[in-house]
Image 1 (cartoon, rainbow, N blue to C red):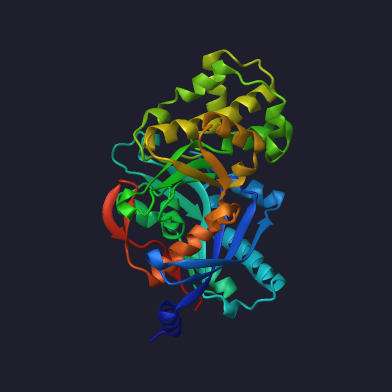
Image 2: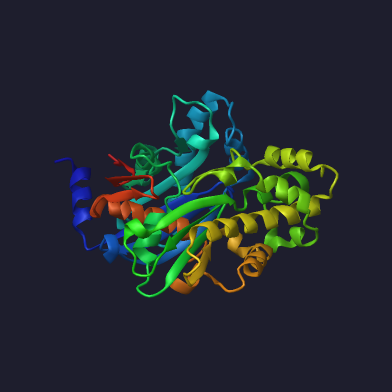
Length: 398
């Protein structure tokens, strides 16, 4: 038997596994690295977050990614070159981080890498009838495995699409495994570039759980801040707090056809970008309003579309608690809007249930990798299909 296959077999049999979960989202601020100890699998999974850090991307690295990010027309040569290059750069970050933590690569069982999304094309976003949904994440798993010496599982979203889903949101799997409560209805809200939530009925089975994207999280605000204020994001919602919400612009954005689609659904910056804002301004005749007012409106837009989705999907009779994660949960104004729109609902950080909010997505992919090697297939869920699947492609170091 190949030595790496033998090692993978032994890892799968272990009562617990140390897995490095990696996540780089649409904000492209850096690589989230979460070292998790995973015991068991499925509903018996218990996890501990041993270490977590975010390694910032250099401005040069951000610009390389932005050159192909969410664009219909790009250099195919650049895409081809970036696929291994990002993996090699990420491997350097991993090796340095392990050194800083005083750990050897041999002490890590698996890497679980989400990769860098460069294009997400749900069926609702493209007009090509001959083609289904598709998504593309780059940062090749083989290069990660070779340059770290650690077995790597990557490219998780393809299996979800192959089984009838749209490749997102995948949070439903990890949320169900580690956050279902016997007595409390929980809504796990993640405000990343795109906002999504998972609703977990108390003591529910997997087929009762649902998850969906709701619309923009931080992506519109971040993009606008970069262009108009030369800042990566609106810290604590400070810039938005200086402006006034423009109701005409807000309503124009909320009339986009995405918000008429049935749930569950998925979307990305391919729709929610600067052009989206400009079109809404043109329709609403608000092209002359101050940038601070646009930021105030974008902030409210994120909050209102999250709450609209909650009202449509969560039964009115259910009492539930919201546990938030992602960068947007640090935006004080977004949270303030959510609380004003949901006055009878408790909103807390996911830290309250033992999930570090900034590490949540990296933890999710560690969970998925654990299921890939040690678990049993799960339904693709999200009402998309009933085909049991495990996700991720396995890359060996040798």
